[in-house]
Length: 262
Image (cartoon, rainbow, N blue to C red; front, side, top):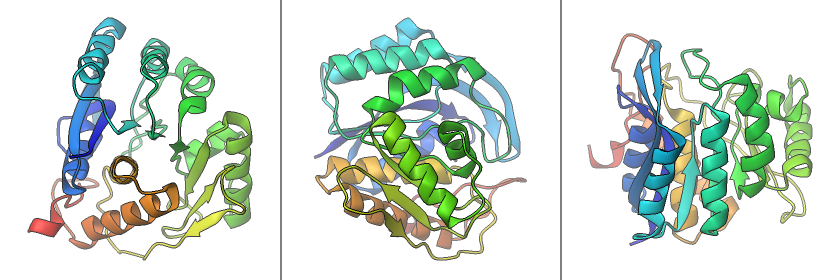
């Protein structure tokens, strides 16, 4: 069985973070492992508390995984401080990890800020250059590329800038403000950008969509698919989880990660 590691924060309500990642990886037929960066007190209406693990303990978690069950892919999600980002980057370089998907989580679906300002600089310098692909939404892409995105042309420009700045492939997700669910992939390995057109699904419950997509991409990379096919498979899985129309909680609810077995 192929294996994947998620390095991210825990979501106590189960819709995003580590919990969403493990559900997604399991439903995409890979063995899921985790290294937890922080505990959050969180539900569909917002985040009320964040308790970080220490860099030393995060380091020990990652060592425990790589020294026993070496992952075929790694997904990195919420990391709120510079020291934790530096720890992750150091370990991924040390173990020569491959198929690294970085979801640069900065703001929760509910609007809660999840990363310190100083940590954004460390993320840019230490972690993004190690990635196979990064998966920012439009607000995150604006921060990382330092441009304003208002249309599809801006999305293309942002993706190109991200590739040039950080050396990794970039999948800029268009769900915020620009279009329904059309994403653009830019990579040095591709002769031209690739657009992935998503189906419009009228579901207000989108808690954890970014975590789910990035984990599904990592799962498909772990299984040996190339990046374009991995993204296509991941978007199909995400669409299925949205189309199931699960409705839980008082805010932006979670997806039906297990829709295929309901």
